[in-house]
Structure formats: structure tokens, C-alpha cells
Amino acid sequence: MQVVLGFVGLLVMVERMVFFQHARTKVADLLLGITNHVRKKAYAEALHEASRARGPEARVIHSILMRHHLDRTNLREIAQEAGQLEVPRIERYMRVLLGVAMLAPMLGMFGTVLGLIEVFMKVGAADSAVAQAALAGGMFQSLVSTAIGLALAIPSYLVYLYLYGKAQRMLHRLERAGIEAVNIVCDSREHDRIVSFRDSLEQQATNLESKSKKVSRGPKIADKKDS
View (cartoon, helix red, strand yellow):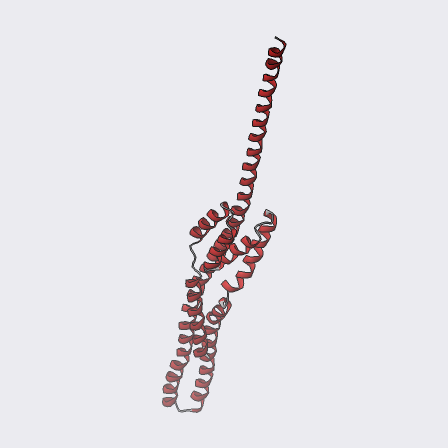
């Protein structure tokens, strides 16, 4: 049983290491490229860049860009929902590794207890000289079971803590990437509104200035006609 646990734990370690290695994304560079496209209203290019990038952060950003026309509140809800969909992928098999770390020493202790029971049963039925040899051999085999369990549990738990930390950091980056993507989309729209409002004010000011010039020229033309 301990051999099976060790094999399962090794498979989980390798799978999780490969996952986190492939899920690495330069979020800052991705957000910079997305920002440039969004400012130019090139949402198709922004979606293409997000779809090419790998990692859960890129998928969350892609979900936000797909619905860039929504308001800030709805975009935040979409970012949260997309992030929740990524949580099972990030925390996949983590409980299995923790289970290996917890079960391995228990099985080792269980094997030790069974070994001791068997030893004492043999000691009781044997002579004194044979009993001492049987006791020594049985104790050795029983303690080996505990040692194997601890040898499996300690590295499994250490790797679990390491992978758990990587998962939590990835979830934090995932949340930050969603917030930044929402801010990029919404701030770009607000900037366009400010620019359009400023242009309209400048146009109104230009129209008023031209009208005032026409009004000021009117009396002069009338005076010339009277003269």
C-alpha cells in the first residue's frame, strides 16, 4: 500500500510541476499589449493577443475583452466568474498530495503495530533464545514500516506546501489581472468620453466666437450704408 501511495504522490508532483511551468505568463507584458490595443479600439487584436497567451490570467483577460461593452460592475462580475472557473484547475490534485502525506505515516504505524503483534505472538510460543532473536528481527521489520511511511510523508508534505504556495500566488495574480483588465477597458471608455466632451466644448466655443464676430461686424456695416 505504501508503494502505491508513493507512486501516486510522485505522479501528482510531476503533473503539478508541469502545470505550473506551462501556466507561467508574463502578465505585465500582456496587459501592456492589451492596453495599447484597447486605446486604439482594436479589440479584435486585443482578443487575439489574449488568446495566444497561455495561463489562467490570459483566459480571464480574454473573457473580459469578449464583453468589453458592459459596464464596470458587470465586467467585475465576469472577471470573478472567470477566475472561479480557473480555481479547480489550479488546485487540481492538491488534496491527493496532502492525503498521501497524511496517510503514509498512518499506514507505517499500522504496519508497525501489526508487526509487533506478530512478534509477540511468536515470542510467546518460542524458547528464550529463539524468542530474543525473533523479537529483534520482528522489531526491525516493524520499525522499517514506520520509517518508510515517514520517508513518504515528509517530502510529500513539503512539496504540498510548495505547490500550495504557488497556487495561492497564481490565484492572487489571477485576481489582479482581472482587476487591471477591467480598469483598462473602463478607463479607456471614460477617456474617450472626456475627449469627446472637450471637443464638443471647443466646438461650442468656436461657434460662439464666430457668432460674436458676426454680431460685432453687423453695426459697422449698417453705419456705412447710412453714410
